[in-house]
Amino acid sequence: MTNQPIGVFDSGYGGLTVLREIVRQLPQYDYLYLGDNARTPYGTRSFDTVYQYTLECVRHLFDRGCRLVVLACNTASAKALRNIQQLDLPTLAPDRRVLGVIRPTAEVIGRYSKTGNVGILATPGTVTSESYRVEIEKFFPDLQVSQEACPMWVPLVENGEYDSPGADYFVQQHLNRLMEKAPGIDTILLACTHYPLLLDKIRQYTPGNATILTQGGIVADSLADYLTRHPELERQISQHGKRTFLTTDSTDDFDRQATVFYGEPVRSGQV
Ligand code: DGL
Image (cartoon, rainbow, N blue to C red; front, side, top):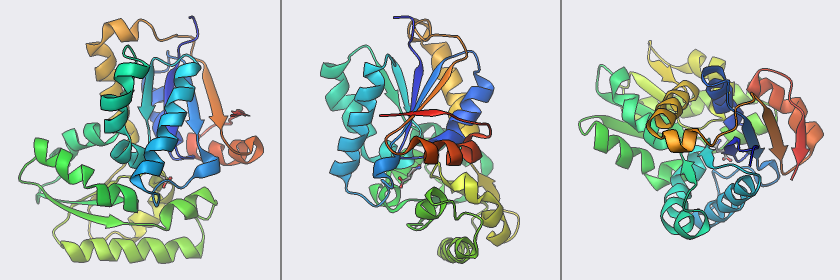
């Protein structure tokens, strides 16, 4: 097969903020992005539903030639990745790989904090899964982790309301709640790939000079390192600098919105 792109998956547009950084760092590869816009948001859905939806999308990316798929969605990484890796891949596609965004972030987050106190802003699904606490403890056992679920943030972003006064209200509300949990927090992770669109407002309502971390660069660094450590897989990825975008919903809507997330014009196809 000559068309073997790297698959990048998200419940909607958020993964484009990750793809953007991956492409910046690894422009030579082909990429196939799939946004499940018709069924977004995932963050308020059950474990089983997120697992089932994510698996369907991963299978679709496999059918289109991807040998490596990045789940550029924290909710899918929290609720579906382990099952896919342990239960599905061995029978479905033992020679293919699916990676997530939580572990690479957990591996580095402790380096940013001086106070040893970090805050995680994420979807309800990611927060209740406790995946961040579990993963961070493996690398930084002394780090204090406080979490705040922000159920309104993805709908605000998906509906293009990230610049509206309504967004101010919900951004301020959740940042205040997070800081009340542990006033010493000096590092805040945007643990949802949609949240970088709210970055200006998040900065505005973040007290003091806490560092705000987005995941795009972290995931891109980790993918570059993974490909170096797995040359047998890296050799199979097609390298024509081609980007293809797919959505499960309207392509017109996708193309209009995706440009904001990806930073350049996008033309999608429908699945
Ligand atoms: N962008 C996804 C994440 O990183 C979730 C968005 C959703 O709720 O669908 O968690």
